[in-house]
Image (cartoon, rainbow, N blue to C red):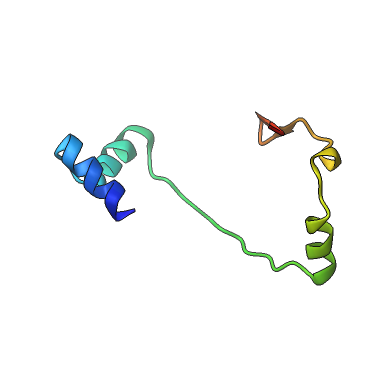
Length: 68
């Protein structure tokens, strides 16, 4: 991430924080909520056995699922 920040600064002359503030001014404040939910041993085993054929949905959050 530090190299990316340095690249952004070198190419644009502005630090990433300035870019972020401009995006916030244009699109509004971003909010992020992460929910960690531990998986049981049974759930972990089922996830390990999951294959692309087991996916029956074609969209996730209104985005198409690509199995490639």
